[in-house]
Image 1 (cartoon, rainbow, N blue to C red):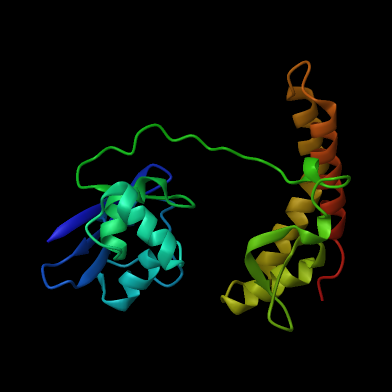
Image 2: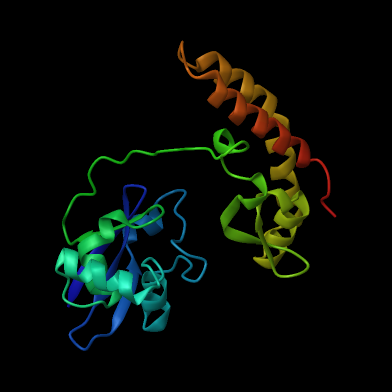
Length: 222
C-alpha cells in the first residue's frame, strides 16, 4: 500500500492510497471530520468516515492533472515518475497542484502556506485583455448550459447554480445581498490600507471594477 497525505490550505484532510493491486482509495482523517468548519474536497466525495474507492477516488485525483497526454509525459520525464498514472505523477508534483490541495509523501510537512491574489481588471483595455474574453475557470448554471464569460454572468446564474447543487434559495439570495451591501465599506477600508506609492492605475482599476460588479448583484436575479 502506498499513501499520499492530502492537505487543503495547510490542513491534513485525508489520505489518497493505492494498493498493490492498483486499486485506489481516499479517506478523510478523523481529525478533519471532527474539526469545526471541515468541508469536503469535492462535492463528489462528501464528508464521511468510510473510504471512497475505485473510480470515485481515481477520477477526482486524475482531474488534478493536465488532460493532455504529452504534458503528462513531460512531467513523467522531468520528475522521474514511475508512470503517467495519477498516483505516480501526484507523488512527484502533488505539492504544486492547482487550487487549495496538496498531496505529499506520508509524513511530509506542507511547509509555509501563502495566498497569492491577483486581479484581471488592470489588464483590461488598450493592448491588454478584452473584458469579453475574461472567463471563470468553473462555469455557473444557466437556462442553457453554463456561463463562463464574466461579462455574461448575472445574479440569477448564482441562484440557478445554488438550485442545481441543492443550496437553499433564500440563503443564496442573502449571500448576494450581504456581499453587495459590504462593497462600499470594503473599498473604503482597502483604500485607507494601501501603502504610500501604490500604483493608482492598478488600485483604481480593481476598485472601480469591483464597484461595477457589485452594482450588478442587485439586478437580474429572476
